[in-house]
Length: 146
Image 1 (cartoon, helix red, strand yellow):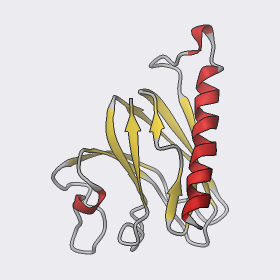
Image 2 (spheres, helix red, strand yellow; image 1 turned 135 degrees about the vertical axis):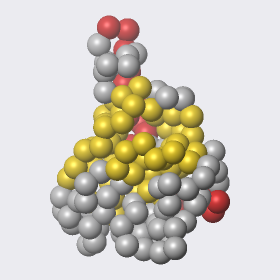
Image 3 (cartoon, rainbow, N blue to C red; image 1 turned 180 degrees about the vertical axis):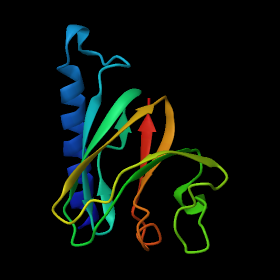
């Protein structure tokens, strides 16, 4: 997928998330008990979703549009992507220094869907597919909550 198409898709998804949040109930603001739904596409080897969400309960609505199975984990970190910890297999080290892994989805088969719900306070995060060599192939997406 070209860089321009990717940025366009991210922009469309961000607009959809912002619009959905603005159309919420009384006052249009999300409360800690009102989940924010975030459309998320998993493709070979990329995570396409909004790069920013509001703090609170977030549900990533995942669709696997790739030919390989994928999963997604959410980790809080201030590290740059190239500084994220790796294990001996080259995968994202969920016990590594400088990050806290909060939650991980089940594996999603090609064409399948899944959800991952997590409470996200203000901060910086990464979304990672940690199956096989997907992390090494840069299947990582930064996420800002705030």
